[in-house]
Length: 162
Ligand SMILES: [Zn+2]
Image (cartoon, rainbow, N blue to C red):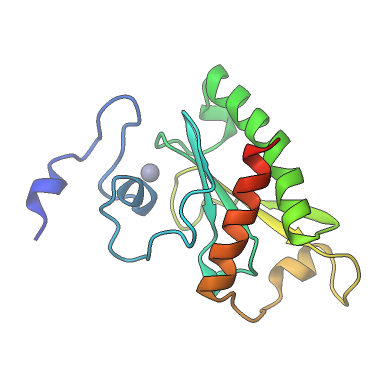
C-alpha cells in the first residue's frame, strides 16, 4: 500500500520530509493515524506550524509548535529558523496565556514519539494541587474537540492581533 508516497523517502527541499515520520506525513496531508488539528493550524509560519495538541493528551489550549523541516532540535536549526521560532514564541506565549487564563506556560520538548522538532506549550492556571513536573505528569480529563477548536481560534485571533 502507498508505494507511490513511499517513493518520497528522504524528502525534497526545502523541508526534506521523511515518509517514516508521522509529523512529516501530517504536514504533507498524508497522516492517517491522527485527525486534523482541532480548529486548524494556529500559526502558519515560513519554517514552523502551531496547532492544538492531540485532545486525548491535553487540556484545551495546549499548543504544539513544530518545525516544517525534518530536524531534531535547536542545534539543527538554521539561524533563520531559530530567529523565527523566537519571534513566534514571543507572540504565541502571551496569546496562549490570554486565551486560557493561564498564569504560566510550561514548555516540553522530548522528541520521543517522532525525531522531529515539536515543542509543547502547556498552559497552567494559578492554584491547584499540582505544579511543575508533577502537573505535567498527571493524567487529566481529555479536552473535547469543540473546546480545543474554540481555544485554537481564540489563540490564533490573539496571535494575529499581536
Ligand atoms: Zn519529520
